[in-house]
Picture 1 (cartoon, one colour):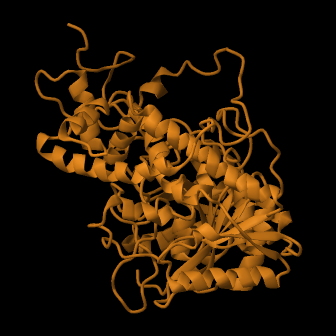
Picture 2 (tube, chains in turn cyan, orange):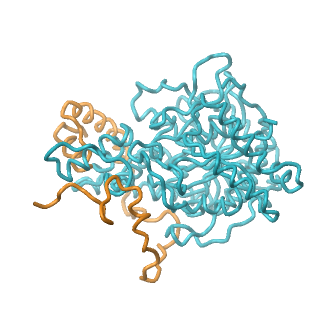
Length: 492
Length: 95
């Protein structure tokens, strides 16, 4: 029965507990869907045998928790023991970790099943999954009857495509500037980036360490609450992970948001914003108001500077993090010519192994950190980042509980459509999401409507630090009001 | 600020990425476009603002300075492109 892969985590959990379904059945259903969905290029390393072993173990465990027996897709950025983990980069070709990331360890200890690894932009640098060494992941949605293939967004494009196409029950993602929320919005699913420090980064291939956070990408808000709890928690192996108790996020989902104060930031009303996005935002605002929330106009004055600050800080951190790819300890090493020394080995290995977007960002990062420019670029960007964070602290101090914005400036665009655009045009995809990473806040994308071509559009809610429960509850209220039930027509 | 070919060559060298001479003009153009975008930051008044060092109010945790891991040379070397006799092997570094 192929409908099993369409289940939500909450439904499967309840059915597993009642004995109505087994993890083996769920896992087989997903594996069969994955086999038929090659055209989406979402799963790039499949692990069916491991999945069946994990499913059988889950079925044998009668006291499993919420995630016991749930088949998941894992973004290729997570190191998974014995299973290729290459961050969609040629430089990690053949890399099989000898260890397991903390997030996947926790999920698997809770009985979750790994179906395989998911496509993404190389080193999570991209907004369309077009920088992947595996080729593009494809969005299951199309513009009406138009045949053109669309991007599932990025960088967690494979995760988004796989969840939207029901190849798995849910997936892990990571978000450095919007890489969970933008793809979630592009395919009509839910994705939450938690507060910086909520989820351990240990064993996740690093892009920009002060911005990276992992989170769940799921079919609804309840599933996001369930899976986020399973991924969260203090980890001594990540010195930035917070030593805070993890609440039962699902228990926070009452749907009651009466008296909550929702901020609408005027700076997010950008020049040239499409009428559809504007209407979606206004509709979402009305829904929260109808649910009993107070709506308040707010100002986040440094919003405009978030993207330029991000494109100093993220490349700077990337240039440092990616220095480890030198052809010595793991991954690709270039073939050397006679007389080549160690410097040529580094230079040729990195030239061959990295794709063009990664090279561009590593070199920009190298430049902004180089002697003579460190103050002018890097330090200035860190000061602007402090101001962006202060903007949020000010509105939260004024009593705002959550902030509502569009998730993306448009619906999903066509693969290849941005090929001739300036890189900066691609970066604008993250204009609404990147502030949240710079300020370390939790943010969630919730599907809220369809555009004129029938493509999903998402809204973003931004919450106070460490209050993911409250944020998820507001998102739950929005989800119930928006009643987004559309699914892509199967063509793959 | 506009980046010249010489600067592009120097940055590629610092980043240890081989860039063919023919590709340097295009690279310099891309850098210039990026820096043009970044330079919007000069409009912001940052007088008296400390550069952010940590996004959450948390000091980096410290632990006792003891060995917590190790003794697994096989695992450490398992993914090396070239490992010999328990070591990573690289081209000759010193004459």
